[in-house]
Length: 250
Figure 1 (cartoon, rainbow, N blue to C red):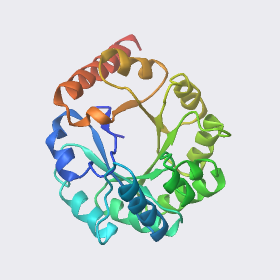
Figure 2 (figure 1 turned 180 degrees about the vertical axis):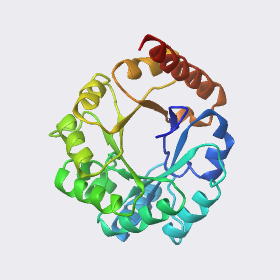
Figure 3 (figure 1 turned 135 degrees about the vertical axis):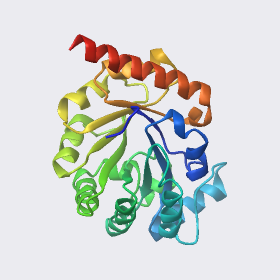
């Protein structure tokens, strides 16, 4: 899917092409965004900007924004992706087609927990509705691009391993798991799906990276310190050492 097996996780209002370029030699993938696509998601993002101390990407045309920032990474030594939010499936298809043009990954956001986004039908609301989430995955997959779904553990009423299996069956290539304080769930997800599992949350060094790999993750992603080259260097070394040792043992 990508090497080295370390990704940069999207940070709303921060993760653009310049962000990825600044540390491109340390990672195998970079998820830009998240970006709101349809009117409901964009209205929710505006509320977040207005009412909270948060940044959001709110360009005049989100699709042009995606195309421009992915084009800026066409020659980068990593695989780009774009994390997207939408209350309906059709905007995801359009965004996925743009990703396909750049050999990028479309990442469906079923992760955000802000009330504004959930009320709009995005984020964790989507995660709680597996039928609708699978429809998004199938819609995106029809464009021929690789599809990731960003999910979160500890969401009430969600059996994440079962959901991951359904996403795999719907055509998801990657399940990107924010493990919160339930790191062991990564093992259950890895057992439940043949999709490429990326584990996220608290990845800072050898110990935190290896923990997820031992649970069965295929890669790890770095969130808040994704602009810190020292952190990324430590994590990349740990990941490469772990897979090298695993190859020798096998």
